[in-house]
Image (cartoon, rainbow, N blue to C red; front, side, top):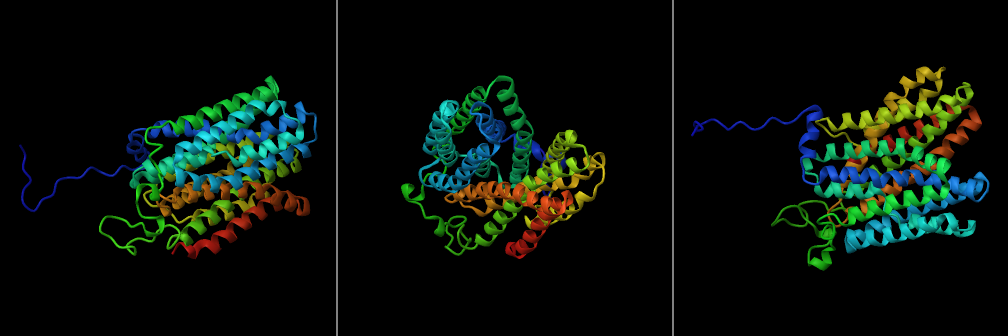
Length: 415
C-alpha cells in the first residue's frame, strides 16, 4: 500500500474543462431523463400559438385578428398563471399542482377543435392559467438536483433544449395542422403535453420536493439559513438580501425575451425589403443553430457572468444588424446575437435559481417564466412599430436599444 509522505498532499482529480464539464453533470442520476422529458414538454408549448391560430383561421374560418385574440388570451393566461402555480408548488409540492395542470390541459385540448369561437377564447385563457410550462418545470428540477458546481452546465443544456424546441415545435405544429387537420394537431400536441406533465409528476421524489416549511415544521423562507447552527443573518434569504439580484435577473430575462421575438419580426421586415422573403426561414433556422452553439459554449465557461453583461453585448450587436445589405451576409452576421441570446437566457435562469431558497423556488422561477413570456409578447409589437415608422433597420435598433438600456440599469443591482 502506498503511503503519503509528510508534507505532501494527495492528488485531486483535475477539474473538467471545455465540453468535459457536461460529463459529470450527465452522470447525475436522472439528469438525462430530466433534460429529455423537459424537451418533450417544451415542444407542444412552443407549437401551441401556431396550432391555435390555424384552428381559428382554417377550422373556424375566422380572420387572423380573431386568431390573434385566441393566442393572446392563451399567452396572457400563461403569464398570469406562472407565478401563481409556482407559489402553489412551493406551498403544496409539485405533484398535486401538476396533476391539476395535466387534467386541465387534457380537457381543453381534447375539446378544443369542437369549441365555438367564444368558448375557444375562454378555454385558451383557462388553459394558459393552469399550464405549468415545461421550461419552468425543467428549471425547478435542475435547480434542486444539479450540484452547485454543475448548475451552470445544467442551465446551459436547458437553454439548448429550449432552442431545439423552438426549431422543431412550430414546424411540427404546422405539419400536423396542414397535412392532417387542426383537430389532429390539437389532440396530438395536447396528448404529448399531458404525458410530459405526468412524467414530471411521477418522478421519484417529486412529491417530497418543495413540501411547505409549515407542514414540515421548518423555518419559513424569511428565516432560512445556510448550514446548521447559523443565525438568521448568516445568509440573506430570498425576498430580503437577494431581491435586487432577482429583480435584475427578471428584468434582463424580460429584455432578452423582447429581443428574441422582436428579432424574428425584424428579420421578416428586412427580408421583405431585400426581396428575399422566401429565405427568412433559413435565417431563423441559422439563428436557432447558432443559439444552440452559444448555449453549449456557455456551459463550458469556468466563470459565470452577471446577467447584465451578456444582455448589454446582445443589445450592442443586435442594433446594427439592419445595416447588412444582403441576406446571405446576414446568415453569418446573426451569429453573435443568437449565441449571446442563448447565453443571456441561461445566465438569467441560473441567477434566479441561485437566489431562490428551496421554499421560494417555484415563485421565483414562475416569475422568471412570466418575465420571458412578457418580453416575447412585447418584442414583436415594438419591432413592428419601429419598422413601420422608420424602415426595417429600425426594428433591430429598437429592441437592441431596449436591451442595452435595461442592462445598464441592472448592472449595479448585482453588486
